[in-house]
Amino acid sequence: MPREPLARADVRPTTASDLETVLDLLGEAAAWIKAKGIRQWPARFAPEWVRPAIERGETFLATRDGTVVGTLTLCGDEIGAWDDRPGAAIYLHRLAVARAAAGLGRELLQWAESRAAAGGNEWLRLECLGTNERLRSYYEAAGYTLVADRMVGDRIPVAMYEKRVQPA
Image (tube, rainbow, N blue to C red):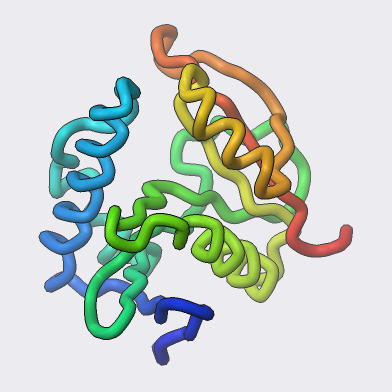
């Protein structure tokens, strides 16, 4: 698949050889949010959590001038949390931006929205830690609507957001 240019980065599907790069980028993002006092991600994602989405072609890398600056995954509703919501949708997971490219997140969200629409989806949906007020505000400022606050596994509060990417 050809690269898809963004204003400041190119996005391409990952390959099996990109696993460590994705894990490193997620680790960098996890360390940054932990330093902000937010516990949302593990210090290092287990490869078996990330590898299946790479193998299915659902994980992407953003690069700028040959340097990896971001990653995201677009896939189906893996945990069935959205079963009660109508409309064709794709789900955003593990969006991370290198600190050197701070500010690129909004651009990657827009890229994901365009890709979701191009795939015939009506919605782009995502979940984030319900107690992460800063991230919740970020998604709301980007036009995402809170659908529900739910508990996952009876212990993890999750905020569920969606954005219409195509008219009904």
